Image 1: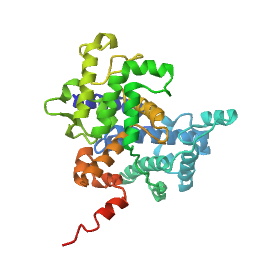
Image 2: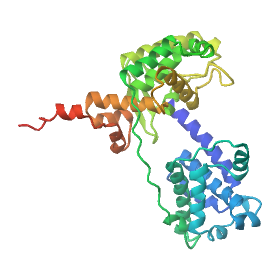
Image 3: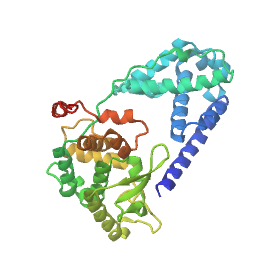
Image 4: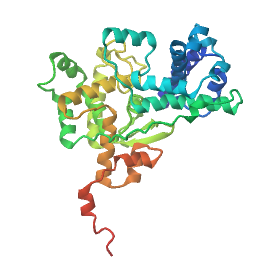
Amino acid sequence: MAREYKDQKNAETEAKIYNLKMMLPDFCAGYIRSIAGYTKPLTQLAYLQRIQFFLMWLLDYNVYFNKKYDSIEQFTVQDLDRLKKADFEEFLNHIQKYGAVLKEELDARMQTGKYIVPSKSSTRNNYLSALRSLYNYFLENDIVDKAPVLKIRQKKVDKTIPIALTDRQAESIYDTILGGSEQISARQEASRIITSARDLAIYTLALHTGIRVSELVSLDVRDINLDEHCFKIIRKRGNEDVVYFDNTTENVLLDWLDERRNMKETLGIADDEDALFVSTKGKKRGTRLSVRSVEIMVKKYAQIAAPEVTNFHAHSLRSSCATKIYDKSLDLVYTQSVLGHANISTTMRYVKNDEKKKKENRTLLDE
């Protein structure tokens, strides 16, 4: 079930955290234990990876650390207590300008003239949050005397408008998955013929239910309740939720389930493989499809069928579903429930300032 998949992913993340802990200085051990009590494994891993990069950056660019140490494992808390606000600002400027790229790789890119894409302000803010978290722990436990990083402000991040497919664009992608297109290469067409039933089920399920890609790939065959037109998933915060699907989704799911059953041996699906969606090629053939594979597949079809939609990605199917649900129901609480948002302010992002609706509802409060 989805719960088992979630537990497995958490176990894999915990293993990465353990390995990373072995590469960090000893003073990080207490911090790692402290955040384990209130953050999820993926968040812990992200924070530790950012802290590790900061320490490696100090080894590369800070004269004091560069001359004194050969590796970050040798760092002491007293060393970190020497850092000034300017040191953190210099690091964050590096992140903003070059991203998480260390000196050796950066020098190689500069010599070859390889283009370096600047990071978004949100990336810079993520690194700042990790460092703030570390220094807050130090201060609370009287490990350091000062924390100049806490004086640095987050950069303002412009809120992006979620992408919402029009009916024509959504149908165009659907038709391309189902029947191909003149814009598809011979290689892509050969792949599409094999995977069309699976890809159509993935696309329709994501577009019509709004579930996240991570939730979608976690589904097992036995999770699908065709009698009740629903399935259970584990949401982002670990809560179990029931998601209902429409008749269109039911039809494509039935087609894929039939094909999955008929092509079990051809696809190399083992008897104990419960995943609803499986890979059809490569080393992972016959095993659970990955989030990355779904992202690549969805983007490929969107670029072919709706090239005018820029910055399209798998999550755009979720935002398209959210917009459509709200447009049809005008019920924000219901839209929140369908999407599984913990905070309704997140759902508010999908509410557009629609002049037509304003005009239609101008007499809404008339007696």
